[in-house]
Length: 240
Image (cartoon, rainbow, N blue to C red; front, side):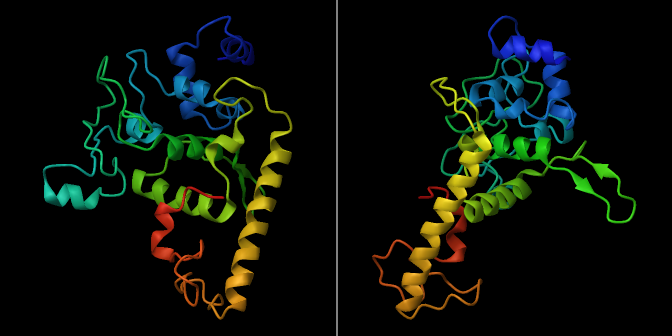
């Protein structure tokens, strides 16, 4: 796997081999920018030679997939946030060849597409330095279990105001977007500024904003756009 092969793939001059796709999925330090190019390139990296699109967890860690529509009540209750909410799909195993078309917004394993792509971006970019030895480590060989990435990435999205599309250098139409990092900062500034103004207005009306676990809608008129509580954080991905 070389930068030349990857650049040739993104330029349309050569395909990306199955071996290279596997390396990009399994080695955090290899081409950290790989999942920042575009949604199309990211999905292609996750696509096997049998057109099976799996998240790294279901491809490399646990090949057992479940959705929230399992006929087994115990399984259904346990996986109710990691499958396809309200969409009964047949989750496809990692080794299945030529699977049926994906449910829009979901991978063949049943994980949500945006969650997986955002996790991979953070997985590639995040480094941790030991406070005692000074050594730097990547997230190598560590993938979030589906329930963990659902909650973690929901929280990241909710508090940062960023979505996976904000990280891509090319949008879905193939248009290049310069200064991605500046745009990320601007997006957060605008989002947090708008949230601050709404919270400040609601607080001035008598809302309780000191306790982060208190319902966000306390003291707000029912038609106020901030009339939601922390229990609904999982439904708050449509951010302003």
